[in-house]
Image (cartoon, rainbow, N blue to C red):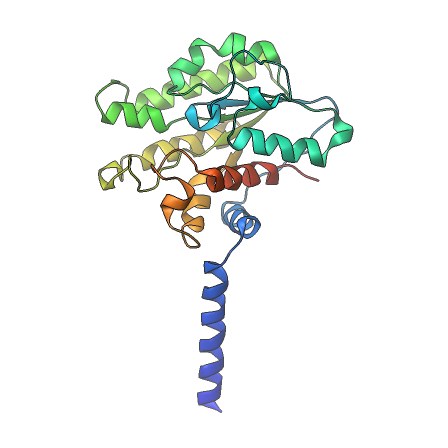
Length: 253
């Protein structure tokens, strides 16, 4: 009997591991959300949703097509896919969704265009993903900012936002990096500090925090990092879908 019990426990353990390795996108996201206790919120009729950030958000969006819910204006990345989910799931809410991400941006560059491309749109939901360039460009010598610069600039941006839009629902995405053609082991552990700052600021400003690093770390248990983000930063189609699934999951049905 003892032998059979040991074998049974071994089988269950192996089955659990096998199930983890074959996790689909919803399971990956739900597992990461459960681990991080992600805060969700509801949308209201007529809400304006704005995605802001760097190239991960930009994703080749058109600068000349500026209307809400425009496929060209939303780019080809996670904002477009998240918008498709939202517009499909909540047709009765008459949502207006914009993407104003700009490739290469660091926090201070978001701040330079914040009035025209964030505050003037008066979003009810403002989603920000920024930080990888603040580290990457410092590391390659093209930017002199430090982790303190990142924290101070980001905090000032959020303070200004809440001053002008006190009721806005903030969503802060976690900067992430995986080993890839643009990311090597020398990025770590220094890069992790940028993740921690984003998480701390999300807590301080009562924002919903999306743990993208945790999500990607779980995803590489199903497929290699190159499948999700070939260079370690910019998502593949699968990576963009993964991020959009995470974004859609923060909305209460």
